Image 1 (tube, rainbow over the protein chains, first blue to last red):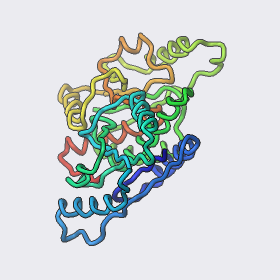
Image 2: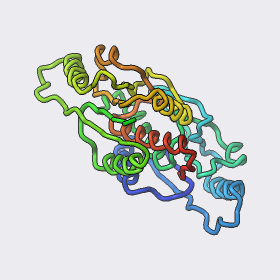
Image 3: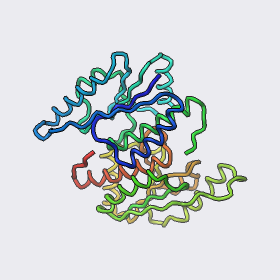
Image 4: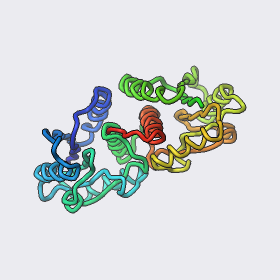
Length: 156
Length: 156
C-alpha cells in the first residue's frame, strides 16, 4: 500500500516543513509516502468563497484514480484514538488498498463533490486547527500508527 | 490574567521552538504569557518509571502558588471544540483568576499528587500526541481562543 497526503492551498511555513520532513523520513521506513499540494487558485478576488471551494474540489478530483481510497480529514469525521487509527490503516492494508489518500481541505473546506467521492471521514480532534498545524498532527499520527502496527515503542 | 505553560521534560526540537515562538508572539498581544520547563531528571537509570513520575510531580508542585488555577492537558480530560475552549478561558477571566496554568506531563504522565492539586483536565484530542507536538497544538489553540474571544477573524 502507498499513502498519499493531498493538500489544498498554501505551501508550508518553514517550521511546518521541518517537522513534516522529519516525520516523512520516519514514515518511508514503513511504506511509500507521497505528498501533493494543489496550489492556491490565482485571481480569486472576484470569486465567491463557494466558487473557490468548487474549483479547488475540481482540481482535487482530477488528481484521483478510481481505485484510490479517499479519506477526508474533517471535523465532522469519525474520532479515533491513536490505536484505533492504527487499526484503520491496518484494515486498509488487509483489504489490499493500493493507494490510501488522506486529504486536508482548503480554507473553505471541501466541496459537495469531494464529499461525495470520499470513502471515509476522520476527525483528528473536536478542535479546529489551522491547515498548517493539521499537516504536522497528521504526520505524527501516521508515524505513530506504524509504530503501533509494528509493535515498536515510540519514544515521546 | 496571566497564562503560564508548564512543561515537564525535554527541551524543544528546533521546528517546535520556531512554531512555539511564532504563536507566543501573537498571544502576548492579548495577555502576559510565560512558559516554564522543568528539566528532565538526571541519573534516572536506577529509577523506576513511577519514581521518575513522582519526582517530576514534586518539582511541578513546588512551582505552583496556592491561587494558581491549574489545568492538566490530559487524554482523560474534557474534550472541547475551539469555541468552547475560548469560553473556558473567558470564564477564568470573568472569575478573576490571576494565573491560569496549563501543563503538559512528562513521558510517564502526571503523578497522583499532581492530579489531586489540579483544578481541571482538558483533552486536546482522543489521539495521543508526542510532548513536542502537544506544545504546538496548545499554542495554536490558545491563540485561536483569543481570536475568538476578541471576535477577530483568524486566517488559516
